[in-house]
Image 1 (cartoon, rainbow, N blue to C red):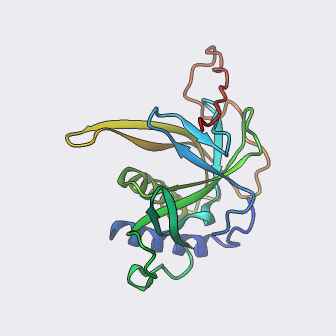
Image 2 (image 1 turned 90 degrees about the vertical axis):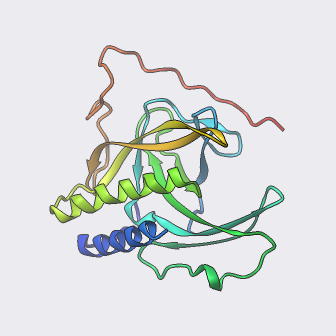
Image 3 (image 1 turned 135 degrees about the vertical axis):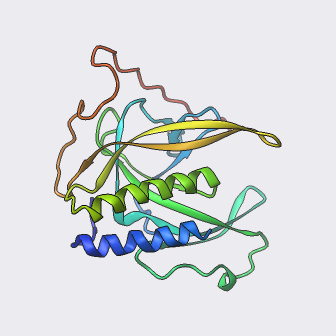
Length: 213
């Protein structure tokens, strides 16, 4: 974790601002993009590397972003994002790019266990389910800050859920399952700490899939 707030109060204020904007409704260098597929698997990078099942990822608390993205003809026509401690992006002030602007949230994660350990990714989403999950994580983070906890870096497992929509069919939603919390200066994560899986259950092997062109 780098470039994090030096005080808990500044982080708390940032989280509160983000919660208010989420309820009412880029600094990604060196990070691959993380995606949740319709098959309910998580993938990242240009080669669509599949995230190892059960691996743990640390969320950078300061990296939560909010803003807008415009998609047209299967490509990004424009994107405007701001960190949660910065002034919010005003939709009405965004330029005309030939495509509608949709609200988007994002966060940076770093893998802290398993084969992907050390990998850094950025996850962005415009879906209602994704924004709801971001809001839930922010609420838990804010609760820890309110209680004075020093460990406020969420360690999560990347999971997924789904529901059936009357019009669109199966809708896949992200689940950032918080399994533990760490302090900013924590160097390692215990592989078995706060793990709900059975101790005798072997870890599933990691699969790699490449993008079909």
